[in-house]
Image (cartoon, rainbow, N blue to C red; front, side, top):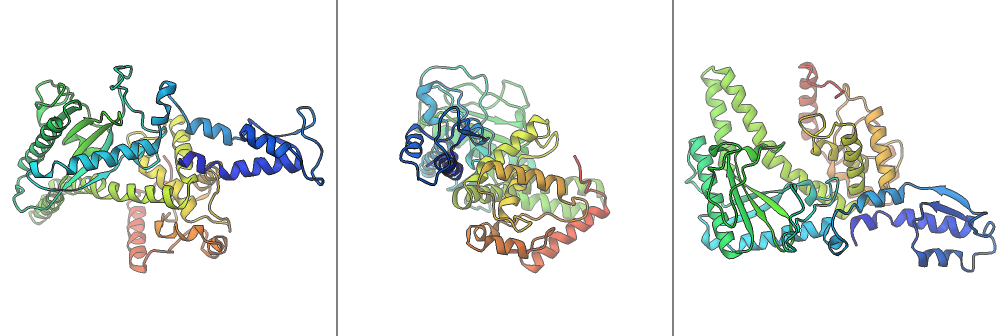
Amino acid sequence: MPLEQRAQIVPRMLAFLLRRHFGVLAQPELLHADDQSTADHARPSEAIGDVTAESAGRLFSLSSRIVEFASTRDLSESDTDRVTFEAAIAGFDQLQREVKALEEKLPLRVLALHAVAPGLRYASLAPPKPLALAQGRGDDAYVEPLHVLVEFTTSNKWPDDMAALHKVKSAFLLRLAECYAAAHPSTHVDVSSRFFGYGAQDGLLTGASSVQLAGADDFDYERDSFVDIRHISSGLTFRLSVLCEPEGALLAHKAQEMVRAGLSAQADALQCAHRRWMRTTQWRAMHHRQILDLCQRHHPAASLTIRLLKRWLSRHMLLGQSVGVPDETAELLAARVFTDPWNGLAAPGSAYAGFVRCLQLLAEWRWTEDMCVVDFAAAGSADSEDSARVASARRVWTTTDGLSADAYATLQAAFDAAIQRKDVRGAL
C-alpha cells in the first residue's frame, strides 16, 4: 500500500466512526461509497440522529485536501499509476541491477549505488514524474533528475593531483555511459563535466543523444562530472556521480599541508571544500537512508508531513539552499516531531498533525540558546505503547536518548562554538 494511503487510515477511521455514531459528515468526504453505505446502514440504537443531507453535522477536514496534494497528477490517465514514489524506487532498484551487470566491463567493480534524491525517499514535493519517451510524447521541457552516487571498490591507483583525479572520475563515467548505452541501445545517455565548460556543446561524446551540459544546483558534486541516464522502462532520469573516497582524503591532506605552511587562506578554502565534499557524499547518503527508514518502517505520516512543510516553505520562497532552508534541513525539522515529540504527546498519527507540530517547533524552540538534535535511534521507540510516557520523561528542550554521552558532548561543543562565532542567528 502506498504511503499516501497508509497515512489516511486513521483519518478515515475517525470519519467512519463520526458518521456512524454522531451523524457527522466530513467535508470534503473521506470515505469511499462502500464505506459510506456501511456507516449509514443499520446504525446503532444509541447513535445520535439519522444521517441526512439536511440534518447531518459537518466536519471540515483537511485530510482529503492533503490527499489531493499527495496525489498530484500531471500525466494522462493511462500514466497515473506510474507517478508514485514506489514506482521511482522500483526504477532505481532496476537501475542498480543493470549497472551491477556491467561490472566485468568497467575498470573497477561497482560497490554500491547510493540514492540521495528526495524523490527516492518519499520527501519531494510531488512524486518523481516520468518522461513519456516511450509514447513519443516530448511534452516536458525539463524533468528533475534523480541524483545517485556510484561507489566503486577501493584502489591505490587514484592520482594524488586533484585535477587529474577529477579527469579520472570523468573517464569512469564515460566508460560507464558507453557500456550502459551498448547494453541498452534505446536508452538516452548524456555525460557532462565541468572541465569542458558550462553551456558549451563541445563536451563529451555520449550514447544515443547529444551532450546537454547543465548548470549546477544545490548539489555541489554536479559541478564535477555526471552522467544522465534516461531510464526507458521507468521513464525517469537518473543523474549518476562518482563517490570517490580518495578525494575526501586528498582534500583533508592538502588542507593540513596549507595549515602547516601557514597559508591560512588556502587552508580555509580546502577545509571548506572538504566539508562540502563530506556534505554532498557522506552526509547526504546517510541522511537519505535515515529519512527513507523513518517513512517506510516507523511513521507513514512522516512523508506527507515533510512534503507539506516543504510546500509551506516554498510558498514563502524559503525552500532551497540558495534562498533559505535546504531540503535536508526541512526534512530534519519534520523528522524531529516524530523522533522526539514533546509536552507528553505521542508521535503524530496524521500528516496534518505532523505539519502543525512542525510549525509549533519553528515557533517555540529557542534556536539561539538550545541545540535541536534529531535522534533517529529513537524513531523505533516512538511506536511502542509507552511512547507518550517516554516523551513526557524527557527534557523539553533537549534530547539525548539514543546518543552516547561523547557524541552529545561533541555536538554541544560545536553548537557552543558556533554561538561564540555568532554563526547561530535563530532566524532566516
